[in-house]
Length: 135
Image 1: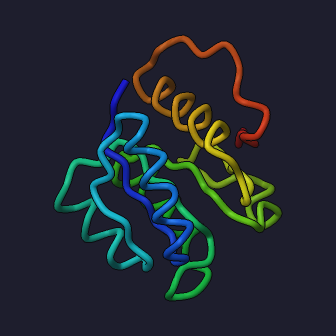
Image 2 (image 1 turned 90 degrees about the horizontal axis):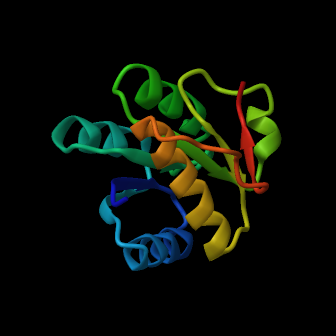
């Protein structure tokens, strides 16, 4: 199952590595952005299936509000990827869950596959252990 994915990450090396992993898995990375305003613009201009969102972006700790907006208002499936998962411990409305950084290629692959299967309404037996789901 291929998807159009937006990477919202302000650390260039992390974003580049994610792009390589996702493209190797056959997904299209529509853009890599470091700020909430750029992410909003991309989502309004382009079809996006899934957004991987860091909490701390170049414009501050705007990722939580951005993830909520993308998920609830703009119909994008959202996975948070952060080194600070405690910041979203209670969950964020409209989003799926959080993957702790640092992470590895397998964890990214299984979390993305899980999110895309949920988006498509396909049966999902269980979440990958690295992915903390929101209620």
